[in-house]
Length: 106
Image 1 (cartoon, rainbow, N blue to C red):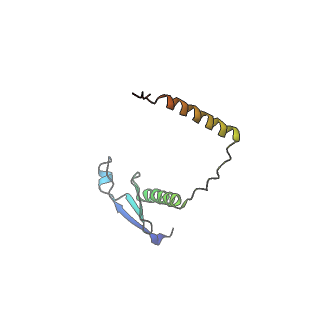
Image 2: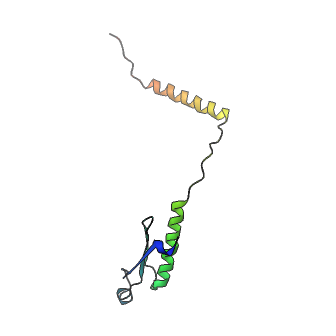
Image 3: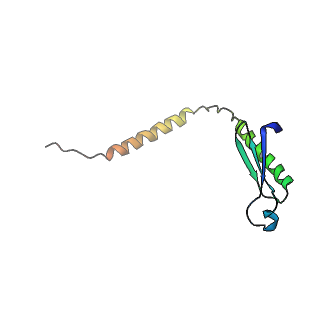
């Protein structure tokens, strides 16, 4: 992540804080230009702290974007488990067959 790829914007943060927040542009918005990811930090009264926090958030988001989960290796199902599943499936089928209506031929 190079500094040329990041666009910084500073603005007045909203919320409680009154005059301290209203007259200083302490909120930081960072936009990663290649991916279009945007992060915002408005927690602190210091612009430097907010910039540092926004950088951390951006790095975290970029890391999750490029993270690929390891492929799942399917496990072997034991024969006993397969027979147990098939037996329960047969029993459910028998119960469901009892639900059908009996048609009397006239």
